[in-house]
Amino acid sequence: MFLRKNKKGNKSILSSSRLLFRRNSLQRLGRFSLSGLSRLETLDLHDNRIESLAEDAFRDLKELQGLDLSLNIIGTVGDALEPLGSLMKLNLVISITFPTKCFPP
Image 1 (cartoon, helix red, strand yellow):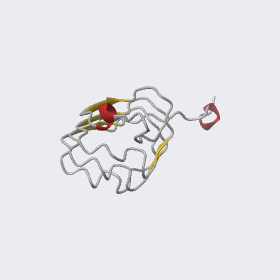
Image 2 (cartoon, rainbow, N blue to C red; image 1 turned 45 degrees about the vertical axis):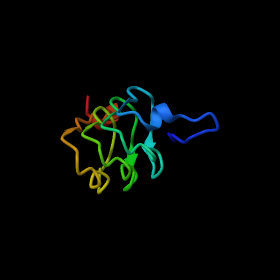
Image 3 (cartoon, rainbow, N blue to C red; image 1 turned 60 degrees about the horizontal axis):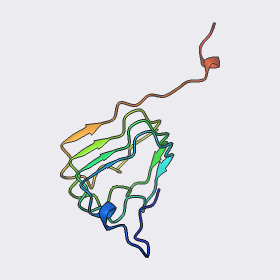
């Protein structure tokens, strides 16, 4: 997922205060995935397939107050949330599906 300004411009996305990316099958947030979204206050990534977060995935989100990462399969968050000094609400309820062979009959 990359949000970059194209020739036509996507000022409406880059100046948004709220983005909803629920159920989009996103698998990872890289270093530049959310770059340019400095005005973002709420980010909803609920119910994707996010497995990993780059350490600096949220580096541009200085104004972010609400983050929903629930229902993903993130192994570790590490220092990814460190730049989020304005964060007031965080949802990290994570579900992990285990293969059935992990449990005896």
